[in-house]
Length: 412
Image (cartoon, rainbow, N blue to C red):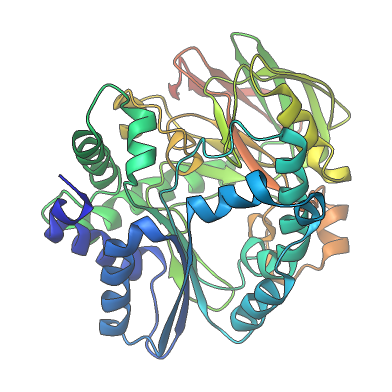
């Protein structure tokens, strides 16, 4: 079975959910769409769904794994510090003029695993620097944006190496469709119900106004101070342009902004992190004064340390998110090697840039005001998983009293 044999009805359903629930494209709005070339069946379905929703223009930008590898295998040294700033500036301009953003992921998560970590880091740093003007439109939630996934064959074989390519792709497709709720009779209604449940969680957390969260578990004793005037979000959220969208399809998390100066203790990852084509596993770090001062990993330690050295904010936190062990993605028992899915199987933290929307009146705050409240700034934003069935979390109030939030990986 090839990608063209994946149930076309479910491809169309995913496209409809991505356009109408994910990015929630508005009539007359442009859509900038990035995807691997292997995802063309979904790109075409999304394009049709977008035009049915009233898009004025859909602009797809396609990438290819062989082209990406050619740079590392045949490119001269100078190539690893170059990024297409002209392209990213154009994207930033499009977002500034009101275009929506959609990303389709589906490439091999381990594509660059055998490449020089220093070169991978240089490429990532150059891209992060060049992409920052466009990325700020997203992290500041000025536009409606969303990410969804396509079951690429190489990705499927990473997950299911014992199966043939057609069988592996079919199994990954089934997992993506289930996690994205498009295998249900009315996916849009299913998402409305799910968003309501996540909203109940965020409303409770926002009413508590915790000063910090204390995580305990195997290898973890971590206190994450929360930024001043932080606000919890999850599921559908309203962008600054007034459009309510679901940034991640799928999503199971509620999240907010930590205080960049108030994180203390040790933490161990509970799932591998796939970053820029490399696998980082068995991460263990220690925080002092909000900054990682010791870091090691059982696999990919060099990549981790290059990541932490990206800039001053790369070794501090920009996000903390709560996900119960009972989430459908966790219960599937699958390791996706893809943050879009794996972060929705476990509580996680993110190195780097914070989201300005995770503050009360965040849309009105400038960079200096966000920093004064404890928000972190960086060229990167990288999530990694720290939760599991043995994770306990207490909310700590300003007077020091504790409230159970998670027990044994589930909402308390």
